[in-house]
Length: 286
Image (cartoon, rainbow, N blue to C red; front, side, top):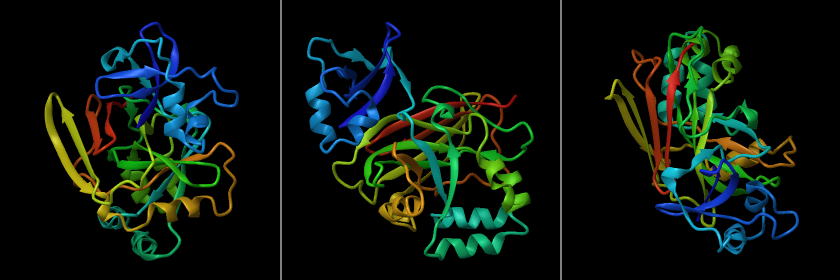
């Protein structure tokens, strides 16, 4: 089952179930303590609860008639880095001074974890992400994102775009927060796939970048190339921090455009993860 937060044609915001061609509105007033998407995700049986909450008197709404909001409420967004071999290689290539650090973190027990975004700064599907004004080498990073309960259990999966300024990070590894965390640098959505079962390890991830209606880059990978277990990444995040609202964790990228490529104003990014859907954003550089 897939869930989402959407704005309907009447401008009302609702939590919905997502079907192939339409959404079904949930009546969030039926049960006390279940008022948000996060409340459902953290319930003992999210799928059963969502099915019970479907408003049978509200006609299904066609997908093209709704606007998707980020599938987060109050959760912080964090990210893991250097979790794919391709990411390790790229980080070593871009950094003159910190290459050995990325080599070591790839094989270390402790993963690289960093803060990415507050929930109110997350960009939804269909809205623009941004390239920093002081960056001349920026790329999208297509990633599987985990929705986590306060106990750091995986309750859902969505698609994430971890925008990155590679030139700023490469200049000095200590500049990582500036390379990764800035306005409109994180997009999530459009839906959450409930984690009733673990996501298959061969799940395909694909990135396509279009410029003036032509494809200028495409690449793909799969979760089988991930060097970490998803559950281990979640447990490391919660090792010394408390997340009463749960959290979102981006799990790293295995698709990185060549060094001569950078995003420019007007590009269109499409990230597709099998079984979840497609996250699309345009690019602005002001």
